[in-house]
Length: 130
Image (cartoon, rainbow, N blue to C red; front, top):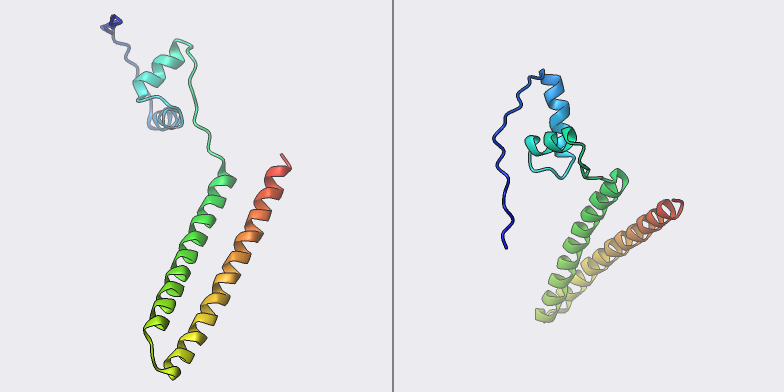
């Protein structure tokens, strides 16, 4: 059976200044309410308002991890291209040049992996203290 929807026919009007409106809008945005009307109705009727919570330190860590992921992806692509090129080469001097380039890429890759390991240890230490 369909639930009968109650029609909201009554208006409540009041004015706020710019600062108050910005504050109310900020509260509304940080909640799960669909709009200011729904938020205001919940607050005025003393219904629970669910507030979204953002962990700032987790956001910062996520940004660093995304940057590291992108760098590792670029290094991995370079390594794959190097290996593909090595398979296609048949002149020894070119192979030596590609091996040197590959070694530099490998070192760069390993330094980024070490950086990830250190960051993960930092995350563990921060979160294990809570």
